[in-house]
Image (tube, rainbow, N blue to C red; front, side, top):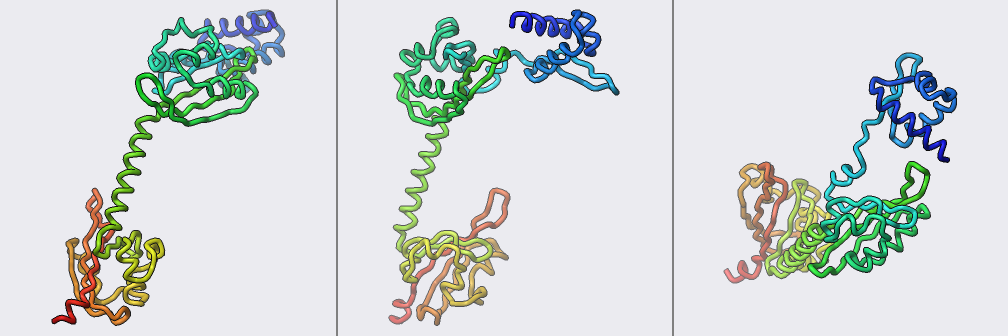
Length: 307
């Protein structure tokens, strides 16, 4: 094993000192090892990313790899990244991870992950899943954790890793998704409040696209038709209101398409036996395109009978 590592190191050094490239024969002559052995060593260096190869005609020319050092690569991302060896001891940690844990590099490098989970990062799943990753099982967890300063939502990937010497290890990618979760919660709350308001309105309201297909209907509109709101979705408005397969001649959307302004119409609908007032208003996108219609429907039958 020592000879194997020494020869690999020799080849890497030779390539580094000859950045214009070298063939298998050139390297064989330089370190006095037969071509077949050099070719096998170069295959290892290519696979591990320590060398690159370019073909010039029949000749294969090898160059030193322009790989970015792992320590620098870890800091290219906002995620918290650590690399553990087969004993689950820290061998690399990104600066973001150190800041998040409020710990120095010297305090964890060479120390077991247990030391960290018992003090600065109380997440027992880290060790448990890291041990499973050592067996080749990639795991991802996403949970909410309470820390002394605040609560964090973390998404943690445990990735099985094999080092250049063939030894197993584990790489942890820890993403702080707290802000995303907070935004999602606010959006859910806003949708819930909107749904509540939408269904509390006594007027009958529905939203449709440019093909007259209903996308959303409130409870009042659905109850008027003796339906449930979800059963209205996907139907065309003229099917429900007029019992027709085509747009009604009094449909306000026809004028809205031309003017892009709210339009109100009143008419007697024999299909329902009711006098209706319908106001259609356009929904305009940021690009100025009309993409939806909002309809407010009122049953005017009682008023018409009193006249």
